[in-house]
Image (cartoon, rainbow over all chains, first blue to last red):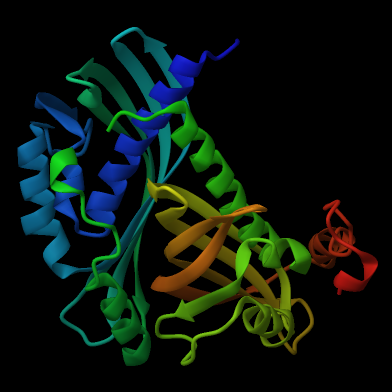
Length: 173
Length: 174
């Protein structure tokens, strides 16, 4: 299939929004998250008990229930396939997630390693792509405990407390 | 944010530079590694190396201390976020590193799985986009000992000294 310049640009714009989602969660930088979903977007998490959530409900869940004890996290995205049709699109993206959560025991961390798939339906509106429907399909999740030295934990904390992702210019928000 | 074709091209060129760094480390292709940086670049590894390093000093560290025990390694990159303004760019990239290191006991290896961020400032020079400043931020670092069969190790070793990159010379291979 030949890709047109227009489609190449659309792919890059969609990829950027996918990246904003992951960086928002992983760097706790929620201004990026606000670029990802339409106001009426629905996020499904089949089989997890979370039910269907709005983007705001999911953000509140992560910010208040999950991230307060999180030491660090990564959602590495890969292998995105694109089906773009005018002002709508579907992408399917593999996700490799890695999270360390603090416990009440010094140096002991809960490590979660998971694999999942984001199946996203997009809409192009007001000059930008946004997700209007996401299904997160869980493939695998493993949880165990690991012990880190105080020095390593301090190094990770130093990194996670710094704002690494550049602030958005006001005009682009 | 609407993108232009020119910006998409810049992103592809910058991604190529980020990949040269990773492939340079992982395949010990040190000229490829150095080609990712400007001549005056410097690198910080937060909570790991105390001092700021030049690319050559960092290469020397990786090619000696780091590589003494390393059998193989991979640095997977993902989620690069770009901000490009003229001839300068800022990027933030997740990395996941998987390294296999020899131990003093035959058949026993240390497997390291580490994650973090590359926070980069890049500059466009006549030769293309180059990293002028890199900060490496650590997120996790897990090491466990594993036993591997001799044939598995033989398969890994079989390609260690292969020349996969056209830019390398014999002198630059270790």
